[in-house]
Amino acid sequence: MSAPTDKDSPKASNFLRQIIERDLSQGTYAQRHWAGRPGDAATHQSGPLDPARIRTRFPPEPNGYLHVGHAKSICLNFGLARDYGGVCHMRFDDTNPEKEEQEYVDAILDAVHWLGFSWDAHGTSHLYQASDYFDFMYRAAEYLIGAGLAYVDEQTPEEMRASRGDFARPGTDSPFRDRSPEENLQRFREMRAGKLPDGAAVLRARIDMASPNINMRDPALYRIKHAQHHNTGSRWCIYPMYTFAHPIEDALENITHSLCTLEFEDQRPFYDWLLDRLREGGLINAPQPRQYEFARLNLTYVLTSKRKLKQLVDEGHVQGWDDPRMPTIVGLRRRGYTPESLQLFSERIGVTKANGWIDFSTLEIALRDDLDPKAARAMAVLDPVQLVIDNWDEAFGLGHLEPCTAPVHPHQPERGQRSFVFGKELWIERGDFEEVPPKGYNRLYPGSRVRLKYGYVVECVGADKDERGEVVAVHARVFPETKSGTPGSDSVKAKGVITWVSAADAVPAQVRLYERLFSVPQPDTGERDFLEELNPDSLKVVAAQVEPSLAQARADDKFQFERHGYFVADRKDHAPGSLVFNRATGLKDTFAR
Image (spheres, rainbow, N blue to C red):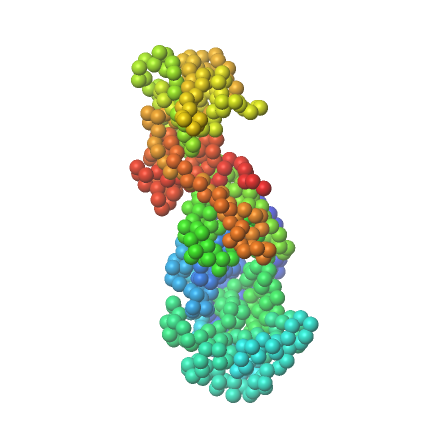
């Protein structure tokens, strides 16, 4: 696993760290054995003491692309294992054959690796999938049936729903609840043999239909589903429910701390009930895993529902899962986010037990803090208008091009200089000229003097307009003795500094200016259709002129465009001779509130 983003900084304590530190100090798992692979109690007891001080897991279902909320979970689970001498397992919870695809499996593995983490430890790959445990899960189900702790229920789904009760009314027993273990076992084996159609029966735990926790009212353990599974093919026609599979997966993998988001808090009693019963039966290793819940990530201006993100993709509201406006990890990566920035973000927001909202600017600040010391600088003009230096030929000679240089990074001289030329015709930002300047405007207007950064001081003398009254060229005169870095650079005072590129060596580029995908801080609250909350200005594409150093940019290279923000060469569309840059974030938060 990668080193921490701030490796020399102490990690802020939180309730999960306190739990882990307590368990380590008390030796809770110190005597537990590990067979080198997942297994039942007998398998693990045949192995040596577990070399991992703790074991965590990241267990996504491969039914979509991971998003920024998953990035927090990845950093949390892998990060805690790293910090406490443990191992984090990469596990696919692939118990639903109808929604899972190999495309998602591959994308998830790539995302975790890109974020800087590995599931290899102690010479072993800890990459697992729940479907590999189907045989044990079936064995566990038969054990529960034989112990009188599970039964086959053949009520209709509607009947089961009605008999479950609600928060004010206890549930009622199924008419099939008191079948003998032998009858239940026979019927369950018939389910497995494919003799019953989908929906005809389910296996339920036999706990307490009057429990105040509805999740303990005989929850379903297995359902019938005649469907092809991406890993097991057509071998199975019954599949375990997630609430049954998840604790078993943790137990087989020797997980110590099973970290879930708060929506699983009500499921913890069943998690413990099931593992207690399997431990009593000698099926799983001891001590067993424990589940702990933390608040999920709620990020303003972001939607993290997989179903609704898929809708955005399928209906063409965005240009794929990796659209840079998407909160998916592939989208953030294409936008210009770095693994280090997402690790830093996760560290800063911390872990709590209370739900709350994190402002999107917190994510952008982490990116700026990561890129500021890394990103090479460059000048780019995103809304170009021509600047003509009227006295250039008189001052320097016809057609002269003056070499100029600027540091690749202002605080890292060892990275060298970038080179470009200054000539009679330049490109400047259209917003850097005003015929009638507003109060406090310190750029170009008739009579004003500004410094063209790394070049000369010029004085504006006017502008040309077309028949619509739009400015097509700005005119200025240069002060030849004022070149930056020369003894005369301060001989003429200028109130403002603007960036520019020369018409002689500038390179055309497509620049995509991304904003937040939604226009409201908390989209999809149910007050209106979430599609109505999409930001119509989330993407603007401009034809820019950029300095010549950017012609050498490679896909995924990141830059600070001076005055504009941080940009990345698009990892799909950027190519030599066809430059495409995405804005990752501005130099400061300017999103309209």
